[in-house]
Image (tube, rainbow, N blue to C red):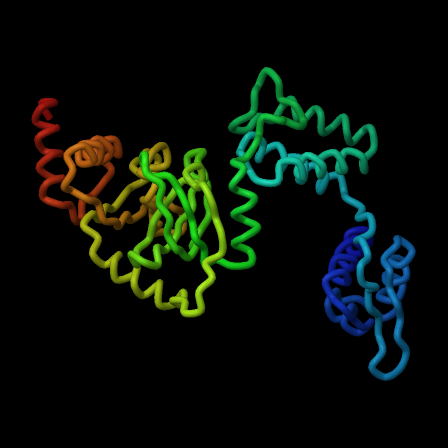
Length: 320
């Protein structure tokens, strides 16, 4: 490891600890005592607020309430950060203003030649969501849903929540345990365990009206919830084995509540297990369209009889 890189790593290592010794630095980075002492002195010269304690149990500690001093980036590190900002542009990610401020600070830290390199990359590299006619460094059209940051702030302190959301023309309110927050097909989704109905739900973040902590003494443990939904998953009535072509089609479009389990490390084969309702006529027609959309690279392990009949009827109508 080069000296500049080692100093940067040591600064991050030190900043994450309330106290450390020279021996710990030697073991962690595989360096001699003299090198460790020299590196510590250099971190102090860069502005790291260290205080030394003498004696048998002595060492160093970082003064509290201090800002991490300036970190020096290599050219490749700067390009990696910049490309990461480019790749996440127009993705409606949270903390838009903070991401813009970080990009501006990054540009302020580098030389004019490095800035020119980044501007050239900005013109050449185009990611999904980038306007090829106006690939601006900072794009103000990337506004996230206003509920998203609030949701992240609350779930970091408590994942047991009361959520109020719109469902059709009705407004509903449920006590839930938040399982995942994810983005799929350009839509932010929240996956929750409905504590009253004891089942999983997937809701678009756009439908959320209000979120607040679920303050109740007796709560169902996450382990108990996992047991309940695992028993529900055992009642799957649709099981498919997908090959590479079907997986590609699945990635183009799939119902929001469905996900694949890859069956080999190269992600060329996968299994889909889920439960599909078969009573309403319209969802059944949509499911039939989607199964045919997957193509021929699908093996049906388990399919409801009504769905199988609908697929056969559709193929006969097409003369297949």
